[in-house]
Length: 26
Image 1 (cartoon, rainbow, N blue to C red):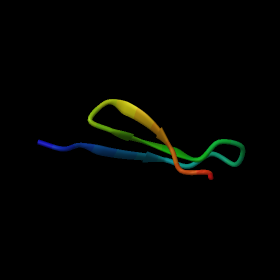
Image 2: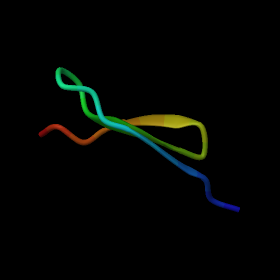
Image 3: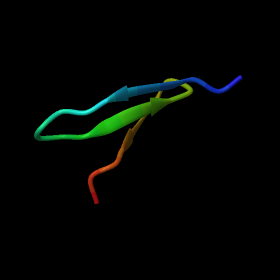
Image 4: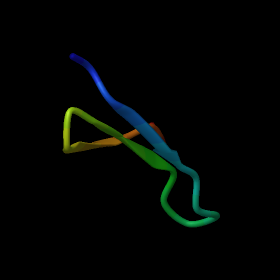
């Protein structure tokens, strides 16, 4: 079961997918 925790910070937008931190700022 997939889990998505979205956390958007001004300096480092990212989210957690299955407990793994993934950067969304390219």
